[in-house]
Length: 473
Image 1 (tube, helix red, strand yellow):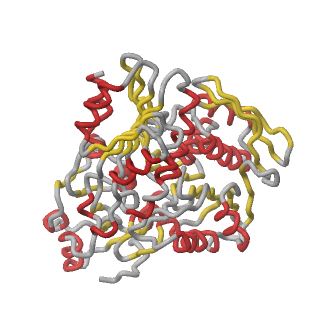
Image 2 (cartoon, rainbow, N blue to C red; image 1 turned 45 degrees about the vertical axis):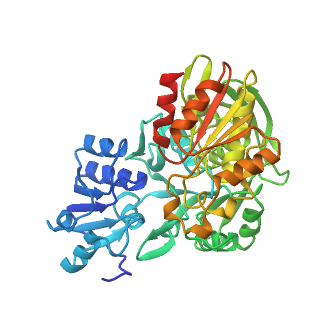
Protein backbone atom coordinates (compact mmCIF):
# COMPACT_ATOMS: atom_id res chain seq x y z
CA UNK A 1 0.00 0.00 0.00
CA UNK A 2 1.40 3.41 -0.96
CA UNK A 3 1.15 5.36 2.28
CA UNK A 4 2.29 8.64 0.74
CA UNK A 5 -0.35 8.85 -1.95
CA UNK A 6 -1.75 12.39 -2.23
CA UNK A 7 -3.22 12.64 -5.71
CA UNK A 8 -6.82 11.57 -6.28
CA UNK A 9 -7.99 10.47 -9.71
CA UNK A 10 -10.23 12.75 -11.75
CA UNK A 11 -12.71 10.06 -12.77
CA UNK A 12 -14.07 9.21 -9.30
CA UNK A 13 -17.78 8.35 -9.27
CA UNK A 14 -18.23 6.07 -6.26
CA UNK A 15 -16.77 6.68 -2.79
CA UNK A 16 -16.77 4.54 0.35
CA UNK A 17 -16.04 6.05 3.79
CA UNK A 18 -14.66 3.84 6.59
CA UNK A 19 -15.83 5.13 10.02
CA UNK A 20 -18.52 7.27 8.38
CA UNK A 21 -20.38 8.19 11.57
CA UNK A 22 -17.77 10.60 12.91
CA UNK A 23 -18.94 14.20 12.82
CA UNK A 24 -16.48 15.26 10.12
CA UNK A 25 -16.79 12.08 8.08
CA UNK A 26 -20.59 12.26 8.20
CA UNK A 27 -20.53 15.84 6.94
CA UNK A 28 -18.12 14.90 4.15
CA UNK A 29 -20.29 11.94 3.13
CA UNK A 30 -23.38 14.14 2.95
CA UNK A 31 -21.59 16.76 0.87
CA UNK A 32 -20.27 14.13 -1.54
CA UNK A 33 -23.79 12.75 -1.92
CA UNK A 34 -25.14 16.23 -2.71
CA UNK A 35 -22.34 16.69 -5.24
CA UNK A 36 -23.64 13.66 -7.13
CA UNK A 37 -21.27 10.86 -6.10
CA UNK A 38 -22.41 7.37 -5.17
CA UNK A 39 -21.61 7.20 -1.45
CA UNK A 40 -21.45 4.19 0.86
CA UNK A 41 -20.00 3.85 4.32
CA UNK A 42 -19.43 1.66 7.32
CA UNK A 43 -18.92 2.07 11.03
CA UNK A 44 -18.77 0.09 14.24
CA UNK A 45 -21.65 0.34 16.75
CA UNK A 46 -23.62 2.97 14.83
CA UNK A 47 -25.98 5.09 16.89
CA UNK A 48 -28.19 8.18 16.47
CA UNK A 49 -28.16 10.98 15.61
CA UNK A 50 -25.48 10.55 12.92
CA UNK A 51 -26.74 7.15 11.74
CA UNK A 52 -30.25 8.56 11.26
CA UNK A 53 -28.87 11.76 9.70
CA UNK A 54 -26.93 9.80 7.09
CA UNK A 55 -29.85 7.48 6.37
CA UNK A 56 -32.04 10.52 5.75
CA UNK A 57 -29.54 11.57 3.06
CA UNK A 58 -30.01 8.24 1.30
CA UNK A 59 -26.52 7.01 2.15
CA UNK A 60 -26.09 3.26 2.43
CA UNK A 61 -24.34 2.38 5.71
CA UNK A 62 -23.06 -1.03 6.81
CA UNK A 63 -23.10 -1.77 10.54
CA UNK A 64 -19.66 -3.10 11.36
CA UNK A 65 -16.41 -3.33 9.41
CA UNK A 66 -16.29 -6.14 6.86
CA UNK A 67 -14.29 -6.70 3.70
CA UNK A 68 -17.58 -7.25 1.84
CA UNK A 69 -18.37 -3.55 2.31
CA UNK A 70 -15.66 -2.57 -0.21
CA UNK A 71 -15.82 -5.64 -2.45
CA UNK A 72 -17.97 -3.77 -4.97
CA UNK A 73 -14.86 -1.79 -5.88
CA UNK A 74 -15.47 1.89 -5.12
CA UNK A 75 -13.35 4.34 -7.10
CA UNK A 76 -12.08 5.88 -3.85
CA UNK A 77 -12.04 4.94 -0.16
CA UNK A 78 -11.82 7.65 2.50
CA UNK A 79 -10.22 6.28 5.67
CA UNK A 80 -11.20 7.88 8.99
CA UNK A 81 -8.50 8.64 11.54
CA UNK A 82 -9.93 6.15 14.06
CA UNK A 83 -9.33 3.30 11.60
CA UNK A 84 -6.27 1.04 12.05
CA UNK A 85 -4.21 -0.60 9.31
CA UNK A 86 -5.51 -4.06 10.30
CA UNK A 87 -9.15 -3.04 9.78
CA UNK A 88 -10.66 -5.74 7.48
CA UNK A 89 -11.80 -3.12 4.97
CA UNK A 90 -8.33 -1.54 4.87
CA UNK A 91 -6.78 -4.98 4.32
CA UNK A 92 -9.24 -5.61 1.47
CA UNK A 93 -8.64 -2.29 -0.30
CA UNK A 94 -4.92 -3.07 -0.21
CA UNK A 95 -5.55 -6.50 -1.75
CA UNK A 96 -7.79 -5.00 -4.45
CA UNK A 97 -5.44 -2.08 -5.13
CA UNK A 98 -8.20 0.47 -4.53
CA UNK A 99 -7.42 4.16 -4.33
CA UNK A 100 -7.66 5.62 -0.82
CA UNK A 101 -7.10 8.90 1.01
CA UNK A 102 -7.64 10.64 4.36
CA UNK A 103 -10.56 12.89 5.23
CA UNK A 104 -8.61 16.19 4.81
CA UNK A 105 -7.34 15.05 1.42
CA UNK A 106 -10.92 14.35 0.34
CA UNK A 107 -12.07 17.74 1.65
CA UNK A 108 -9.37 19.48 -0.39
CA UNK A 109 -10.17 17.52 -3.54
CA UNK A 110 -13.97 17.62 -3.54
CA UNK A 111 -15.09 20.51 -1.32
CA UNK A 112 -12.37 23.11 -0.78
CA UNK A 113 -10.87 23.19 -4.27
CA UNK A 114 -10.82 26.74 -5.62
CA UNK A 115 -12.16 28.23 -2.37
CA UNK A 116 -10.54 30.74 -0.03
CA UNK A 117 -9.98 28.70 3.10
CA UNK A 118 -10.87 30.21 6.49
CA UNK A 119 -9.30 27.73 8.90
CA UNK A 120 -10.13 27.79 12.62
CA UNK A 121 -7.50 26.21 14.87
CA UNK A 122 -6.72 26.00 18.58
CA UNK A 123 -7.13 23.64 21.50
CA UNK A 124 -10.50 25.14 22.42
CA UNK A 125 -13.33 27.01 20.72
CA UNK A 126 -12.95 25.74 17.15
CA UNK A 127 -16.56 24.65 16.73
CA UNK A 128 -18.07 27.79 18.27
CA UNK A 129 -15.79 30.15 16.35
CA UNK A 130 -16.34 28.31 13.06
CA UNK A 131 -20.11 28.40 13.58
CA UNK A 132 -20.17 32.12 14.35
CA UNK A 133 -18.03 32.94 11.33
CA UNK A 134 -20.05 30.73 8.99
CA UNK A 135 -23.29 32.38 10.12
CA UNK A 136 -21.87 35.91 9.72
CA UNK A 137 -20.78 35.12 6.15
CA UNK A 138 -24.09 33.46 5.31
CA UNK A 139 -26.13 36.29 6.86
CA UNK A 140 -24.07 38.81 4.86
CA UNK A 141 -24.95 37.02 1.62
CA UNK A 142 -21.53 35.45 0.99
CA UNK A 143 -23.01 31.91 1.08
CA UNK A 144 -19.91 30.04 2.31
CA UNK A 145 -19.18 26.35 2.25
CA UNK A 146 -18.63 25.13 5.78
CA UNK A 147 -17.80 21.91 7.57
CA UNK A 148 -18.04 22.08 11.36
CA UNK A 149 -17.69 19.67 14.29
CA UNK A 150 -21.12 20.43 15.72
CA UNK A 151 -24.71 21.03 14.63
CA UNK A 152 -25.21 24.76 13.98
CA UNK A 153 -28.76 25.54 15.06
CA UNK A 154 -29.30 28.23 12.41
CA UNK A 155 -28.78 25.56 9.74
CA UNK A 156 -29.71 22.45 11.75
CA UNK A 157 -26.62 20.97 10.10
CA UNK A 158 -22.86 20.78 10.49
CA UNK A 159 -22.19 21.46 6.82
CA UNK A 160 -23.37 23.67 3.96
CA UNK A 161 -22.46 23.55 0.27
CA UNK A 162 -22.62 27.25 -0.43
CA UNK A 163 -21.90 28.89 -3.77
CA UNK A 164 -19.63 31.61 -2.38
CA UNK A 165 -15.85 31.86 -2.66
CA UNK A 166 -15.06 31.00 0.98
CA UNK A 167 -14.98 27.77 2.96
CA UNK A 168 -14.95 27.68 6.77
CA UNK A 169 -13.07 24.63 8.08
CA UNK A 170 -12.17 23.46 11.58
CA UNK A 171 -8.43 22.86 11.59
CA UNK A 172 -7.98 19.91 13.91
CA UNK A 173 -4.58 19.24 15.53
CA UNK A 174 -5.48 15.55 15.93
CA UNK A 175 -3.72 13.03 13.67
CA UNK A 176 -4.96 12.48 10.11
CA UNK A 177 -4.99 8.71 9.52
CA UNK A 178 -3.04 5.56 10.33
CA UNK A 179 -0.89 6.28 7.26
CA UNK A 180 -0.47 9.98 8.12
CA UNK A 181 0.19 10.75 11.79
CA UNK A 182 0.53 14.50 11.20
CA UNK A 183 -2.24 16.90 12.30
CA UNK A 184 -5.20 17.34 9.98
CA UNK A 185 -4.69 21.10 9.78
CA UNK A 186 -1.39 20.68 7.93
CA UNK A 187 -3.40 19.65 4.85
CA UNK A 188 -5.06 23.04 4.52
CA UNK A 189 -3.85 26.22 2.84
CA UNK A 190 -5.49 29.11 4.72
CA UNK A 191 -6.43 32.38 3.13
CA UNK A 192 -7.04 33.41 6.73
CA UNK A 193 -6.70 31.40 9.92
CA UNK A 194 -7.68 31.88 13.55
CA UNK A 195 -5.62 30.49 16.44
CA UNK A 196 -7.72 30.55 19.63
CA UNK A 197 -5.19 29.08 22.06
CA UNK A 198 -2.71 26.25 22.60
CA UNK A 199 -2.83 23.91 25.60
CA UNK A 200 -1.89 20.31 26.26
CA UNK A 201 -4.60 17.89 25.13
CA UNK A 202 -4.98 14.60 23.21
CA UNK A 203 -2.66 12.74 25.58
CA UNK A 204 -3.03 9.64 23.43
CA UNK A 205 -0.99 11.21 20.62
CA UNK A 206 0.89 14.16 22.17
CA UNK A 207 3.61 13.61 24.80
CA UNK A 208 3.51 17.05 26.40
CA UNK A 209 2.82 20.74 25.73
CA UNK A 210 6.03 21.10 23.71
CA UNK A 211 4.83 18.34 21.39
CA UNK A 212 1.53 20.19 20.94
CA UNK A 213 3.39 23.45 20.30
CA UNK A 214 5.45 21.75 17.60
CA UNK A 215 2.26 20.83 15.75
CA UNK A 216 0.94 24.41 15.82
CA UNK A 217 4.41 25.74 14.98
CA UNK A 218 4.36 23.59 11.83
CA UNK A 219 0.93 24.96 10.92
CA UNK A 220 2.02 28.58 11.32
CA UNK A 221 5.32 27.98 9.50
CA UNK A 222 3.40 26.46 6.60
CA UNK A 223 1.16 29.48 6.11
CA UNK A 224 1.88 31.56 3.03
CA UNK A 225 3.30 35.09 3.50
CA UNK A 226 0.13 36.21 1.68
CA UNK A 227 -2.06 34.63 4.38
CA UNK A 228 -3.36 36.27 7.55
CA UNK A 229 -3.34 34.69 11.01
CA UNK A 230 -5.65 36.02 13.74
CA UNK A 231 -3.90 35.09 16.99
CA UNK A 232 -5.31 35.28 20.52
CA UNK A 233 -2.47 36.85 22.49
CA UNK A 234 -4.22 36.20 25.81
CA UNK A 235 -2.58 32.80 25.43
CA UNK A 236 1.15 32.77 26.22
CA UNK A 237 1.83 29.78 23.98
CA UNK A 238 0.21 31.59 21.05
CA UNK A 239 2.16 34.77 21.78
CA UNK A 240 5.39 32.75 21.69
CA UNK A 241 4.51 30.81 18.54
CA UNK A 242 3.68 33.82 16.37
CA UNK A 243 7.11 35.40 16.87
CA UNK A 244 8.62 33.40 14.00
CA UNK A 245 5.69 33.51 11.60
CA UNK A 246 6.16 34.40 7.93
CA UNK A 247 2.52 35.34 7.34
CA UNK A 248 0.72 38.51 8.37
CA UNK A 249 -0.30 38.25 12.04
CA UNK A 250 -3.19 40.19 13.57
CA UNK A 251 -3.45 40.00 17.35
CA UNK A 252 -6.73 39.92 19.27
CA UNK A 253 -7.66 39.61 22.93
CA UNK A 254 -7.88 41.77 26.03
CA UNK A 255 -4.26 42.93 25.91
CA UNK A 256 -3.86 46.67 25.36
CA UNK A 257 -1.46 46.07 22.48
CA UNK A 258 -3.85 43.83 20.53
CA UNK A 259 -5.17 45.30 17.28
CA UNK A 260 -8.63 43.87 18.05
CA UNK A 261 -9.68 44.18 21.69
CA UNK A 262 -12.67 43.54 23.90
CA UNK A 263 -14.04 46.67 25.51
CA UNK A 264 -16.82 47.02 28.07
CA UNK A 265 -18.95 43.92 28.78
CA UNK A 266 -22.32 43.76 30.54
CA UNK A 267 -24.80 40.96 31.18
CA UNK A 268 -28.60 41.17 31.04
CA UNK A 269 -29.83 37.56 30.69
CA UNK A 270 -30.23 36.08 28.15
CA UNK A 271 -27.97 38.65 26.48
CA UNK A 272 -24.31 39.54 26.81
CA UNK A 273 -23.47 43.02 25.52
CA UNK A 274 -19.88 43.71 24.47
CA UNK A 275 -17.90 46.52 22.94
CA UNK A 276 -15.19 45.94 20.34
CA UNK A 277 -12.15 48.16 19.81
CA UNK A 278 -9.94 48.23 16.73
CA UNK A 279 -6.61 50.04 16.94
CA UNK A 280 -7.81 51.21 20.41
CA UNK A 281 -10.70 53.06 18.76
CA UNK A 282 -14.38 52.18 19.05
CA UNK A 283 -15.44 49.71 16.35
CA UNK A 284 -18.93 48.64 17.40
CA UNK A 285 -21.36 47.36 20.02
CA UNK A 286 -22.67 43.81 19.81
CA UNK A 287 -25.01 41.53 21.72
CA UNK A 288 -25.07 37.76 21.81
CA UNK A 289 -26.72 34.84 23.58
CA UNK A 290 -23.30 33.22 23.96
CA UNK A 291 -21.91 33.42 27.49
CA UNK A 292 -18.45 33.78 28.99
CA UNK A 293 -15.28 35.65 28.14
CA UNK A 294 -13.94 32.71 26.15
CA UNK A 295 -16.92 32.99 23.80
CA UNK A 296 -16.51 36.75 23.55
CA UNK A 297 -12.91 36.16 22.44
CA UNK A 298 -14.15 33.60 19.91
CA UNK A 299 -16.64 36.22 18.72
CA UNK A 300 -13.92 38.86 18.53
CA UNK A 301 -11.83 36.73 16.18
CA UNK A 302 -14.82 36.12 13.90
CA UNK A 303 -15.56 39.87 13.84
CA UNK A 304 -11.96 40.57 12.83
CA UNK A 305 -12.15 38.10 9.93
CA UNK A 306 -15.53 39.44 8.83
CA UNK A 307 -14.21 43.01 8.84
CA UNK A 308 -11.21 41.88 6.76
CA UNK A 309 -13.71 40.44 4.26
CA UNK A 310 -15.39 43.89 4.13
CA UNK A 311 -18.63 42.79 5.77
CA UNK A 312 -20.36 45.90 7.19
CA UNK A 313 -20.39 46.27 10.98
CA UNK A 314 -24.19 46.47 11.03
CA UNK A 315 -24.47 43.13 9.22
CA UNK A 316 -22.04 41.55 11.69
CA UNK A 317 -24.03 42.88 14.64
CA UNK A 318 -27.33 41.56 13.24
CA UNK A 319 -25.72 38.16 12.66
CA UNK A 320 -24.75 37.98 16.34
CA UNK A 321 -28.27 38.86 17.45
CA UNK A 322 -29.72 36.09 15.29
CA UNK A 323 -27.07 33.46 15.99
CA UNK A 324 -28.82 30.57 17.76
CA UNK A 325 -25.76 28.68 18.93
CA UNK A 326 -24.53 25.11 18.55
CA UNK A 327 -25.99 21.92 19.90
CA UNK A 328 -24.07 20.57 22.89
CA UNK A 329 -22.37 23.90 23.54
CA UNK A 330 -24.09 25.38 26.62
CA UNK A 331 -27.34 24.12 25.14
CA UNK A 332 -30.38 24.34 27.41
CA UNK A 333 -32.12 21.00 26.97
CA UNK A 334 -35.13 21.94 29.07
CA UNK A 335 -36.53 23.32 32.30
CA UNK A 336 -38.71 21.44 34.79
CA UNK A 337 -39.93 22.51 38.24
CA UNK A 338 -37.73 25.59 37.99
CA UNK A 339 -34.61 23.47 37.34
CA UNK A 340 -32.67 24.11 34.11
CA UNK A 341 -30.77 21.25 32.48
CA UNK A 342 -27.88 22.30 30.23
CA UNK A 343 -25.70 20.16 27.96
CA UNK A 344 -22.09 21.06 27.23
CA UNK A 345 -19.15 19.41 25.48
CA UNK A 346 -16.56 20.57 28.05
CA UNK A 347 -13.96 17.99 29.07
CA UNK A 348 -10.53 19.69 29.18
CA UNK A 349 -9.88 21.33 32.60
CA UNK A 350 -9.78 24.80 31.05
CA UNK A 351 -13.06 24.24 29.22
CA UNK A 352 -14.71 22.94 32.41
CA UNK A 353 -13.52 25.97 34.39
CA UNK A 354 -14.50 28.53 31.76
CA UNK A 355 -17.92 26.95 31.13
CA UNK A 356 -18.85 27.01 34.82
CA UNK A 357 -17.55 30.57 35.14
CA UNK A 358 -19.51 31.63 32.05
CA UNK A 359 -22.91 30.28 33.12
CA UNK A 360 -22.73 31.33 36.79
CA UNK A 361 -23.90 34.97 36.30
CA UNK A 362 -26.95 33.82 34.31
CA UNK A 363 -28.39 31.84 37.25
CA UNK A 364 -28.00 34.20 40.23
CA UNK A 365 -31.06 32.86 42.08
CA UNK A 366 -29.89 29.26 42.22
CA UNK A 367 -26.90 26.96 42.33
CA UNK A 368 -24.68 25.68 39.56
CA UNK A 369 -24.71 21.89 39.84
CA UNK A 370 -21.77 20.59 37.81
CA UNK A 371 -22.12 17.00 36.53
CA UNK A 372 -18.95 15.75 34.86
CA UNK A 373 -18.16 12.58 32.92
CA UNK A 374 -14.45 12.17 32.05
CA UNK A 375 -14.64 10.38 28.70
CA UNK A 376 -11.95 11.62 26.31
CA UNK A 377 -8.58 9.92 25.86
CA UNK A 378 -7.00 12.76 27.85
CA UNK A 379 -9.58 13.17 30.63
CA UNK A 380 -9.49 9.43 31.38
CA UNK A 381 -5.73 9.68 31.91
CA UNK A 382 -4.13 11.05 35.05
CA UNK A 383 -2.36 13.85 33.15
CA UNK A 384 -4.98 16.33 34.43
CA UNK A 385 -5.59 14.67 37.82
CA UNK A 386 -4.04 17.53 39.82
CA UNK A 387 -5.51 20.25 37.59
CA UNK A 388 -9.19 19.28 37.59
CA UNK A 389 -9.96 20.27 41.24
CA UNK A 390 -9.47 24.00 40.61
CA UNK A 391 -11.70 23.79 37.50
CA UNK A 392 -14.77 23.38 39.72
CA UNK A 393 -14.12 26.42 41.95
CA UNK A 394 -17.31 28.23 40.97
CA UNK A 395 -19.64 25.22 41.14
CA UNK A 396 -21.93 24.89 44.15
CA UNK A 397 -22.56 21.14 43.95
CA UNK A 398 -20.37 18.71 42.02
CA UNK A 399 -21.13 15.23 40.70
CA UNK A 400 -18.29 13.18 39.20
CA UNK A 401 -19.08 10.01 37.28
CA UNK A 402 -16.59 7.19 37.10
CA UNK A 403 -15.29 6.95 33.50
CA UNK A 404 -17.15 4.23 31.62
CA UNK A 405 -14.31 3.34 29.24
CA UNK A 406 -11.30 3.10 31.58
CA UNK A 407 -10.47 -0.33 30.14
CA UNK A 408 -9.10 1.53 27.10
CA UNK A 409 -6.42 3.16 29.27
CA UNK A 410 -3.36 1.32 30.69
CA UNK A 411 -3.87 0.86 34.47
CA UNK A 412 -0.84 2.96 35.44
CA UNK A 413 -2.11 5.92 33.39
CA UNK A 414 -5.74 5.96 34.55
CA UNK A 415 -7.54 8.97 35.99
CA UNK A 416 -9.24 8.46 39.37
CA UNK A 417 -12.71 9.96 39.84
CA UNK A 418 -12.58 9.02 43.53
CA UNK A 419 -9.34 10.96 43.96
CA UNK A 420 -10.82 14.02 42.25
CA UNK A 421 -13.79 13.96 44.64
CA UNK A 422 -11.43 13.57 47.61
CA UNK A 423 -9.36 16.56 46.39
CA UNK A 424 -12.51 18.64 45.91
CA UNK A 425 -13.70 17.81 49.44
CA UNK A 426 -10.28 18.84 50.74
CA UNK A 427 -10.99 22.21 49.10
CA UNK A 428 -14.29 22.23 51.04
CA UNK A 429 -16.39 21.69 47.93
CA UNK A 430 -19.68 19.76 48.03
CA UNK A 431 -18.51 16.96 45.74
CA UNK A 432 -19.79 13.42 45.22
CA UNK A 433 -18.56 10.32 43.39
CA UNK A 434 -20.90 8.09 41.36
CA UNK A 435 -20.16 4.71 39.77
CA UNK A 436 -22.82 5.10 37.07
CA UNK A 437 -25.37 7.44 35.51
CA UNK A 438 -28.42 5.98 37.28
CA UNK A 439 -27.00 6.86 40.70
CA UNK A 440 -26.39 10.46 39.56
CA UNK A 441 -30.01 10.80 38.43
CA UNK A 442 -31.31 9.40 41.74
CA UNK A 443 -29.11 11.83 43.65
CA UNK A 444 -30.12 14.88 41.60
CA UNK A 445 -33.82 14.10 41.97
CA UNK A 446 -33.44 14.45 45.74
CA UNK A 447 -31.07 17.45 45.71
CA UNK A 448 -32.20 19.71 42.85
CA UNK A 449 -34.33 22.72 43.71
CA UNK A 450 -36.02 25.55 41.85
CA UNK A 451 -33.55 28.07 40.40
CA UNK A 452 -30.74 25.54 39.99
CA UNK A 453 -28.78 24.99 36.81
CA UNK A 454 -27.71 21.40 36.28
CA UNK A 455 -24.71 21.70 33.95
CA UNK A 456 -23.91 18.33 32.38
CA UNK A 457 -20.45 18.13 30.82
CA UNK A 458 -19.36 15.24 28.60
CA UNK A 459 -18.20 14.69 25.03
CA UNK A 460 -20.48 11.64 24.78
CA UNK A 461 -24.16 10.79 25.09
CA UNK A 462 -23.86 10.25 28.89
CA UNK A 463 -26.58 7.56 28.80
CA UNK A 464 -29.15 10.19 27.73
CA UNK A 465 -29.02 11.68 31.23
CA UNK A 466 -30.46 15.01 30.06
CA UNK A 467 -33.79 13.70 28.79
CA UNK A 468 -34.11 11.12 31.55
CA UNK A 469 -33.58 13.78 34.19
CA UNK A 470 -36.05 16.18 32.62
CA UNK A 471 -38.65 13.45 32.42
CA UNK A 472 -38.32 12.64 36.12
CA UNK A 473 -37.89 16.11 37.64
